Length: 312
Image (cartoon, rainbow, N blue to C red):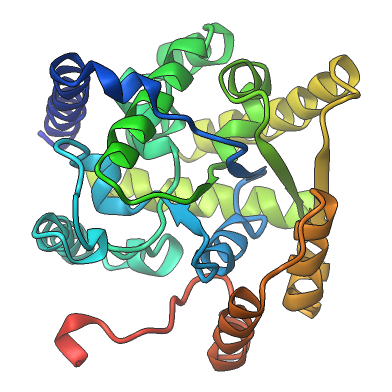
């Protein structure tokens, strides 16, 4: 029953977004200017970069609750919207079913999430493949045009932004690396930050993640398929990036290596800003440095390091 429920939830939010835009046509005039897009292979450090970008008060991350309950947009403090608690309850329910999910893929209801949560609602998303491991869907996903998913993604950002919570968007998803042509068509001025990591480590980590996700919803043995299919997905990502770069040498893509990010996060972040002609503000520098300083050794990639409501 989990997958049908997820499908219904995706359709329900899509209906809310499309209906809100129809009732408020001015939403489509909202400008999404030069958003940060952190892309790359799974488990390559996209989460840490996104959490550090979140510390910059000039930026505007996509929050987990917003991706799943996007309309009407929040008009006040979007981190304390009443819908945050509903998302937190849903996440806690999933964690109780499979506690390993919180270990391998931890997100807070009021924290940054992946764009894949929105792409889900156009049903062109790796999430559906991860939930069910359906070969026919996986093959279709590899060949279908993803432009409509990114157009819907932009509409969702326009709806959310129209509520008044503004700033340059900071976004991320490993999914983007596979579909850079579609992303670039919709966001031609996107600031692309490409994450790299040892592919041997990545393959093992990705297969472990997918096995955990699949095991939450199915007792079938998908291991042979996961090992074969998801390593192919990683290869597709690399090939997709290389093909895009060859076709669009004019597009700036800033490369970041996981080892450099882990060794010196602050220098890496300053390099990211500099690659696009920006200088990190003092506020952003201090907030990011505080995040790095407080993170337990070896766990920089996930903690947001601020008290949850239950611990205040």
